[in-house]
Image (cartoon, rainbow, N blue to C red):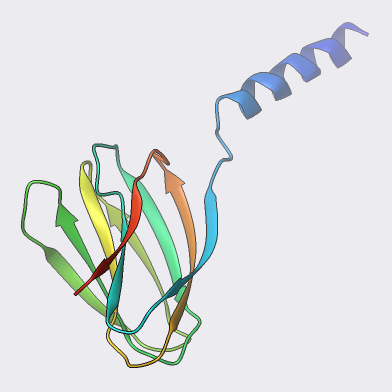
Length: 119
């Protein structure tokens, strides 16, 4: 009985700490628009992306105090993993004339602002 109770408490404490938490999303992006993930103060996060659409996606990072770096051109059906620094946004830009679709799995700090921007 004690072992079962101890196991229950351990499981409860691990799950409440968010050790296994992730953000999972399939996001649609209009032609020539951007999806911005993390344009606020936050910690480090890692994103696994898969381009599910037929347009090329431009992925890059932009610190919230200005600038941008590390551009990646993600072809249809390609995947990439991007580690994003503290207080830096991950920008996913649809470069095409068709709707884009991207699957995201985000781990780390999940206190992330999300928005769409026109170019």
